[in-house]
Image (cartoon, rainbow over all chains, first blue to last red; front, side, top):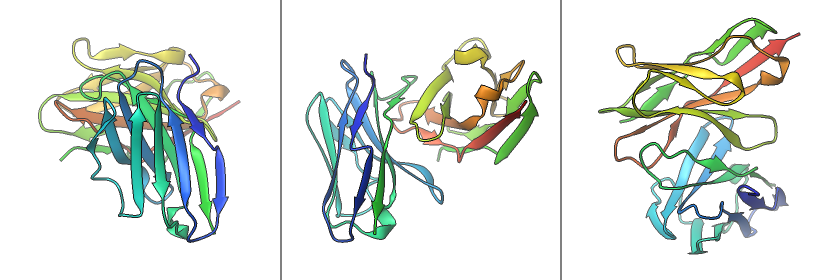
Length: 115
Length: 113
């Protein structure tokens, strides 16, 4: 299995531009998570999908952030408009089952820099 | 509310020596506990987990962790450290019925040759 795939690996954009991050979960996994990692705040859960349905989006910072999962093999995280404080590494993770003892498998991350 | 504490920002150990990376947690009810490792410019990799049963859990790359309910701890251990073990280690917890994994802030392990 190729594992969780994320693209792009690096993104540099100017403030105010739209940014779209992409994720392909592990085949057969039914739960998908988007995280953000910064030095100041560590790892933060942004949103959690189960069977393509958003279950918990309480971690999404503000309305500039949106996430979709149109099918079981693809998800996007969009930031519009982007701001310098959005600079971080964004991880996508998937698991078989989203609760209990199910472990999550992480993608390599997208390093976003907003200038 | 759930929380995880990793009291040490960095742990230094010589190659061949045993290592311990500490983790304490707070949840209501029985916890599900996890350890992940992150190498530079990589995603987190799952090492091991505790669900129930034996308090000593064995995982990948020779790592193990001991669940101690009375001390609410889940320390990561390895009998003999390798230079290649140098990385950032995260402890995480999820409570019964919960979905989100709550991660600690991470501990940098540095193994010297």
